[in-house]
Image (tube, rainbow, N blue to C red; front, side, top):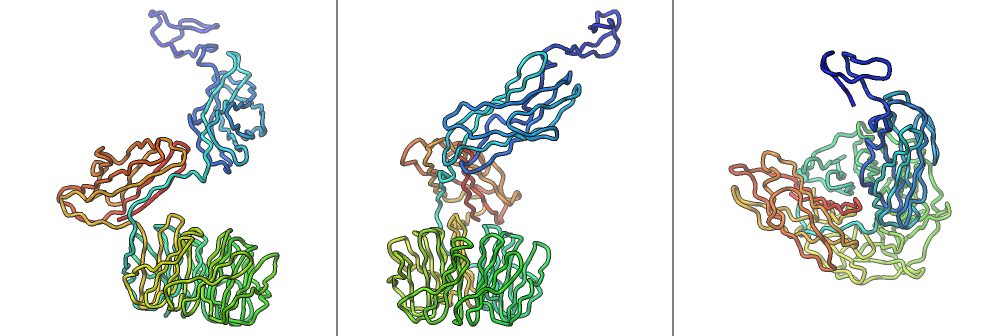
Length: 522
């Protein structure tokens, strides 16, 4: 409480002076109580396997020494709370404040293992002369496996690479970042929906690419060629003797593995060194489920498996050259020449039936029931966990490699500069006309309220009012998914009058637990 006025106007005073002609704070009122939670949110969302750090402030008009503790009354509970600040850390801490001083604290929350639901945390502060202060926040502990799904129409399309060189490998990091390399030192980067040439320090054929993230890229090729990109410059990788050609590279985090000529296998962890491969056959492809569960495949039916710090050969009933491998924690699949496909199950490599005899050069999957293989003469095959089916690829060029993202987007590269994309259907609308409806199918196992948000890259073409979801104008829509069979939503886009152009559209669905799914199209 503050008072202000002239001497004759009955000003407010303090216990030492009256009729003061400057503002006086009356201590001991409720404004003197600790101010807790300036930055403490009302709702905290976290995954069941996530440790959450929440920063908040603590201040008091009078100052003093204060004790902070927490309680939780939800089921399941948060397993542990831990405070940290400049003065102290622990499950219960004591801090000292000067008058009107404000300090920042961090509350670390660790949920109970493998449990999720709704909880509530209270930060309790004692020590103020006015009593105890309690600040409460609801906690939504989310099961990461319950992330909502968003489905819109996907299709294959041919991309303009602007080159004619054979493209031999591709790294599809996310919808905004991809890299493809090939003959004549060609390296292309996907930027702003366009493939552009990327300068680097190598003159030769790029045969393998691996991306740890958009700013950590590794290239391999002939004569033991290895260079790495740190987001700013390209650098030669660490020296290893020998000039073996390298055909592929794969990584588990920052630990990398390469395979190549005469059974040569190199690893980086963190320095480069040569491994004992226990084979002299040419190795063409490598992929793993972890840094202790890796497969390498090569000529004459060669399969090598790495586990317990050792490479060992595996038996397979073929002498075909094997070109590429993909695996997850439940299965592994290999493709090779003359339509060869094998799956590892029950301790055996079992041949699979596919409707092609073309050489198969690349394989990638987002799950064991969603795997794609590519090969000569434009062959693309899809495996749904039961059978392989053929897909029209739009081209007849030999396809050499494939990579994808967790949300189902794919990129394929091949001879003569071929790059294919599989993703949300790009849509063309006439000037001054509304688009055909985009049908959005949204599901969430928790059947909770969700928020659909639309963002866009071209502000000259679109504004928030250009979008209608289920007839509601605006770029945000609240969707109540309370049934097992949710009704699809319709999104209609009407560009600004008299304007033409192109825009990247990003759809984000967020559920009540803070879990999100994102889809993009143009």
